[in-house]
Image 1 (cartoon, rainbow, N blue to C red):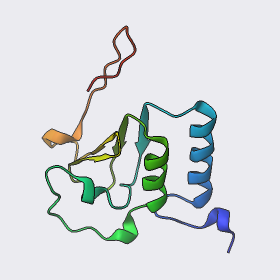
Image 2: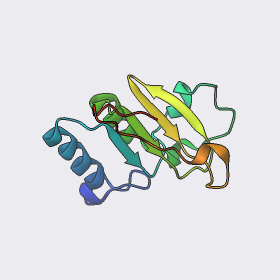
Image 3: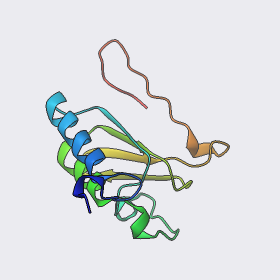
Image 4: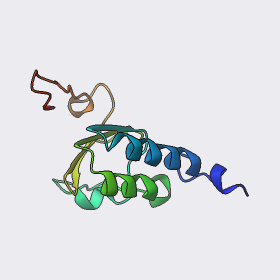
Length: 117
């Protein structure tokens, strides 16, 4: 099997490697948008996540990217449940269905360039 085409979850290994290189080249990122939840994000949730997750549907490599690059904000979908967590200094927001209250967030960038939710 071609390792670059190995499916990790929704992503291929080559997708995550490219994202890692882009983050390195850019010196990091303020906002990271992901389709999948990073693996183990529920362990960092506040309040605690009481749903059931299949770890095979979550991506360890995106958790590792967040841990290493520490973007200020991470938004992800896929599971259709609301969850908020911190991975290191990164604030992770897992978004719900569009018709539910915790499904949409607005980021504002004021003149000083500091992101606010």
